[in-house]
Image 1 (cartoon, helix red, strand yellow):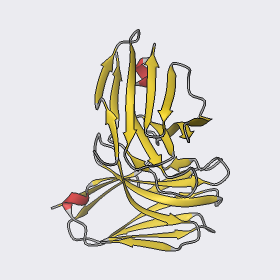
Image 2 (image 1 turned 120 degrees about the horizontal axis):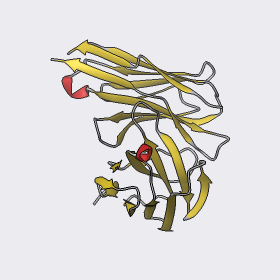
Image 3 (image 1 turned 30 degrees about the horizontal axis):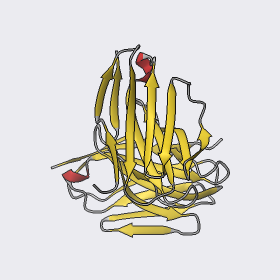
Image 4 (image 1 turned 180 degrees about the vertical axis):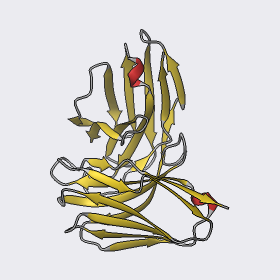
Length: 113
Length: 113
């Protein structure tokens, strides 16, 4: 059974810092891995999608990497801003379960001005 | 309207009520999903529809009844719910059920009294 774990559960940093969020998964039979952002009480905004054949994806100040063999992904946020404060979720698209998306519990990020 | 929309955004209902949640996607996608997000738990997949056919029912109680009348619309009919069903219900869509990005709606915050 696929399990997705995100560490840390919560993170507080001063504005301007570079930071790394971690995601690990137990079953490497995945189509892809997706990083989302969720603001309190709101839906999910897709940030980056990495296909299983890819190693990384970049969008602006965000860079996500994928090491499928070791079951790990990282989301790197450069020069953090208060507006980056949100919960960050990673999810894997499971290969042998009809493309099911399995989520971690998220990392709650707070960027202090 | 663009993306994935959900109505209502907030719903309060008694245990004997019957209500429906509505989701509409304006992206031309073929797959639609219902997820449940309870406090302090990872998002849980409830139902998957592909080309208007239900392809997955993730052991969801029968008091939740999905309906997909066409590829753009998805409903979740609710009846005789329990207080523990209070949660954020999120709808998502993707081009197909495999390796494409999932896009989420803003969610319906449901409270069962």
